[in-house]
Length: 449
Image (tube, rainbow, N blue to C red; front, side, top):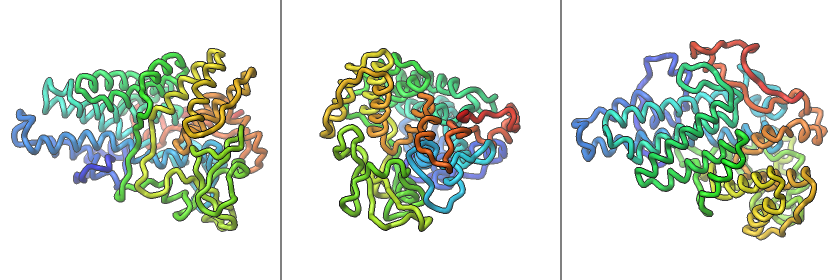
């Protein structure tokens, strides 16, 4: 939900298939109710864009579309951290436990609700656009509200394509590959950019440009991604917003001084500075310097919710209303660096990476001559710059390193072979989508060999 928007009452849907397929939490139902769109846009004089009811209704709908993506990003980050090598289960919840150990299967995993919500957000974006055309007519094509709704739909596709191995492209459509979903995201971002530029909404246009860069990166179009990333100015940041009504669950569920149901993986503990109790930091693995990009919290002797595991807590997000960065200029510089790495220009890549390090006071790393060393530096810098933003599991998947990373951990409870590398599609979608078969044998679940 958009967390700055007053709530809008949602009525119960009559279409059972849609209700189940695009389920969303009560925390945001008040803002993004699909039937509520009709109520909001049933105005006294639909021909008058300046009417008070119209002015109040349309921004709420556009905010709701964008916010429908925001409201699940916290859960997405937690589960992506558990899927990768960032978080470990330190509580009592089976969903965290199964994800951490790679035990989940199609039809039995905790990310199904997140996917359902993103699918609903995508559908809501389409429905909102249609309503804007009905109410605004030709003005809709250059309206900032249309640009905002399109951004929400594109973001939903981007996250779905990065995270799940398959999904439908449209409501009640057949399942297609993750790459096809990302291709659709790119098309949607392109349309968003055009609309936003026409509307004079530069922030939306820049967010869409950054989103398109990320989608291209994950698809392997490194040059195209770098070209888009280069147009995102330094200092730009687009994040998921949270407030007291819709809290950042990274804080409330996994952070010191709150519930400690998950914590930093034991493989990273040796890098955490434990000299002072409380707020601390991780050390840069190349120079052993304090890395301001990775704030942590640790108190010796304090165990997590399971009363067994020492809790090493992230400290990037400290209060329930902290926003989560989704797209920002530092991430764009990383994309440019990766493109240079992919073309064997290690000096060029390190120039960018060392500038990012200099920005936070870290010593430069020497330009490597070995491809594997360069790759590992790039991934280490991505882990630091994108700390607690959910991208580590995506990176391990696209570099084909999940098995190697978990094998190096040598943890019998987290075996390297047979570990899922992406999530299977929501079984709820298959149950209520007439074009998808709810059959384990026909659904994807990529795992390490």
